[in-house]
Image (cartoon, rainbow, N blue to C red; front, side, top):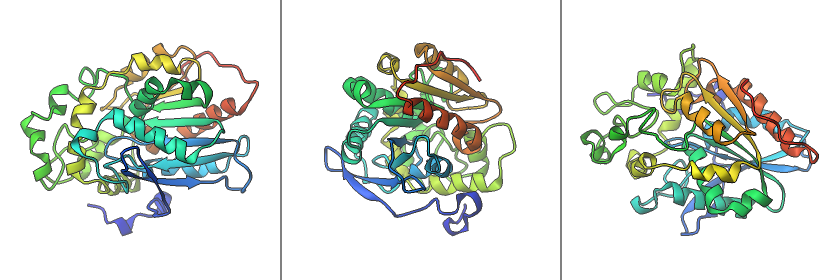
Length: 328
């Protein structure tokens, strides 16, 4: 297992306590970090990153520098930890739902954004949360949210392609007692496979990344980040992942600029999920990343960041017109 102190290189500085706290509607403290434009100029829009299951706001670390350097447009970045993840407060079983996470995102937006345009970045479960928010608060997407990036996520049918639904069930004997174990069990966490109750490097490498070579430091970063959230907390989210179905929610995203990113070696949310989302969003830009896996924005940050920058520039152009989707 990787020592937290050992991380360096491209991930040096990814662990930070420079956070504020936003109170969710039920009072749960949500850890939030804000990053201003590098040149200290006034931001024209706010980017909010919504991370995936078992991760934390650190998963966006390789996006921060590129977005902070932007001048056209200048953006303020906001990253936060879901309840039950990272440095945010714990999540009770009854509140460990995508619906509650969407309400938390709304609370964050109310607390840290004013009237400026907003672009939401959602990875994996974070993309599901963005979809749910679009369904719950459509006026927010009509008036404030000008763009979304949905990265390695699914709108439903999680059990049909990717992780088997039976493994996601809390009644599966492999996952039922996970809170009592010292490590991670198959089917509960999207990124790891257990071996005798121990977190394994091989499982992280295989499930999080694709077919191409991945630097050891990148795998170390994933191992380190996965230690940020207690496995007892993750067990609470099993049901909401297995029952996720929000294809109807995509209707609320059809009128805004959208980037849909998938990787063709993603073992958790295979590219078929990305194609299905893009089919429901005919004006979205579809990006297929060859050889990459579920953590595509960590594995191929230069490529993904370039397309995020393009999305932000389109959103920042008051006269910009929506572009017809195409695969790149």
